Image (cartoon, rainbow, N blue to C red):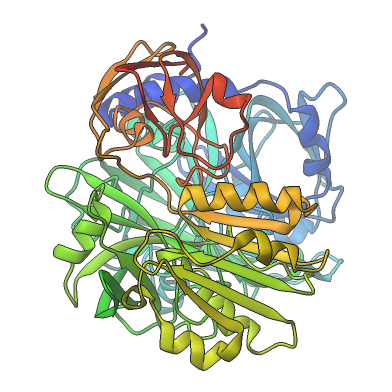
Length: 619
């Protein structure tokens, strides 16, 4: 296979131990624009472009226009770009450096949808009002770390008057922009002057201002290709672009880069990579965007790592602890809707645990998140660690909120069914529904009265619409699902969260009573360990790897720890994202998403185990 990466990219991939992942992702790189991307290109209001000037400095800028200003050529080998505001371009350092056949890195990015497409090549047919980007490399990027913003055009006419500022040190005005930045764009080039433009994002403050000339920026987990770092490794010069979304101004910085590929990160600000890069500013310029937009902030990316603090730990039921989580500086946390969850990374003695927990606090109160965690006898590490190791004032790494389980906005009637700790996503749902006229009920089953979490809060908010059920000590709940379903009207939406057998039983009974799958929403507990589980040898047919997976670790986590790219999303066996073909061996299915036919030859690696001693997977 033709090598897709240059020397610098390969060396950084090897230094970081991510060469195998990079090779698996190499297939996404093409020399033509994908047919499906042509409408995407045509609807954009801007493209971010970088180039390198005669002195070797790299500049990056946002080139704006009306939808349609960018158009892919019929052969999909080039993009035509209409240019506006010649006066504005006179003061833009990117355009000052641009000439016929100049190398450029291009990035089409739609902030509202988190879609992006890298288009690298060179400039041809450069005139006062248009130019062509001849394509060398095209590939999509994932939506991680992009803060969503809607873009509304304030004025379709290009700006006619341009006020610029320049400097060699970061003054107070520039620092203020950088300190609150949640989005930046990066220009880089290899030692053969091939340019690239990429995006970086995080919560406000993720770019650290070290002094008047130095920035320190974390490198979060990505696609392992290291296009930007590979360029920096060969040519330690870069360009940065920051936007002042309120004033429609762009700040172009050019300078020198040093990479720090393995630096202790006890604060978790790198998202677990321990990678940073330092940028030393040599010159900066600010200028207005050629078109004036009204940028509407929607939300932060749920993948932005956050370091939050455990404020309070409370007992809310037998074996269930509540953890109140806040921002260490008292800032509000990202907004969420009822049913959302957060992902917590816990550092054990020998391994990291990544666990997802539903947010139980009221969505109207963004001063905190709260989660409730059941101590599980056969814990896979998460609940045991939280119950035994985490203390008040401890810092923990969090990503999210993620919204995969929530109330159907159009439903005229809601019936919620909770089994044990499965009540957690319903607690904020009750808070939300209590302020509406929509009818609802929560049916909450637990093994005993002592195991009902948030009982007083639920009764105070929901009153008689909250019904409780116990098993009376005989192991069988007095919640009659068959009768409950049969009594509901046809347009009712059901929400179920609890053990896998409970969810499976409910789905079967609801289907038998004629309720379509779109009206049955569910969330499971995720991976679990059985007393009979034994270590399993997992063979990966495509990569040739073998690994021993012990009970307490998921097959998915073992695959990821060995540096093999594997898709996943929910980590609860609900979404099918992690499904892999089984070539040999017998799975022990513990998901709630695969059909009987699928289970013959496939497995959900995030929750399922093996009945056989070995599994061979098509990966």
